[in-house]
Image 1: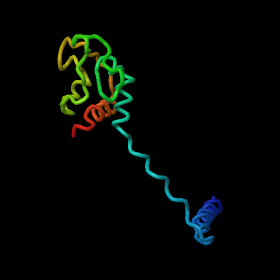
Image 2: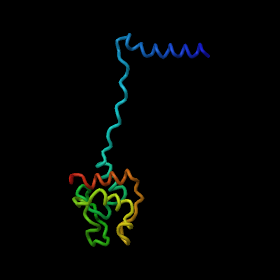
Image 3: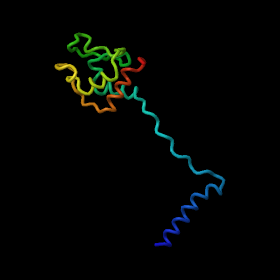
Image 4: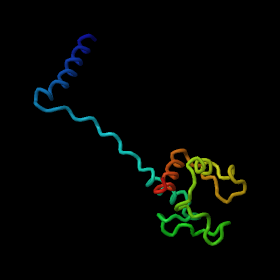
Length: 126
């Protein structure tokens, strides 16, 4: 057992020293994962979760087509709606807790989805 441990230690040392002796450097560490583009992710969620069926947004063509309680325009246009992140978090987590009887369904959004939607909705407003 001691011979195996010694052999593995020597092999490990050789692997560390070999690039230096050969005039090369070891491979650089892998690059950090790119930052998540929350705005792009939120835009995709806005379409995928059905938000664009009821709500208009300038970044989404043909959005807001559904005729709901807000009449022919559907639900509110969210392009430049001045809503705070705190309000949006509460609303997106459970709309009926904020306004009982709302037509907006609870989409069962995860926290990361809520944060991405907030980033999309507030893009250009900060």
